[in-house]
Length: 159
Image (cartoon, rainbow, N blue to C red; front, side, top):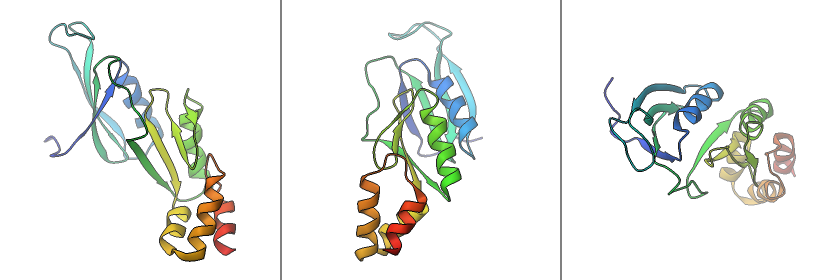
């Protein structure tokens, strides 16, 4: 299979394979496609250690690089996962948070490898797209949430 023209490269300390395999179990259209081992020693590892992992997350091609502790993830990059209902929102949120991750605000959470996720129900993005008073009410409701509450966003949309 040819390599994608554009691939997201995610830097991990040493757990790229574990992270990729976790994402593949949580999100649809996700899989690990290749694991490459280092052909020689390098600053953060030894010959034979997992160096890179090719995988997809919700259809997005990625490469996980075990580059060591020099660089870490921050909120400047996140995956935004659109959800259709509270059940789907809960499933993704809980998978990340309950696997050593942590909650943040406004639908954001962080996995145990430090990668940030936005678990965003479509009802929220639809409210923002509607604009006006509806968007303002939904936005105000969201500002008090960690995990997004679909019923509360729907109620805010209605006024």
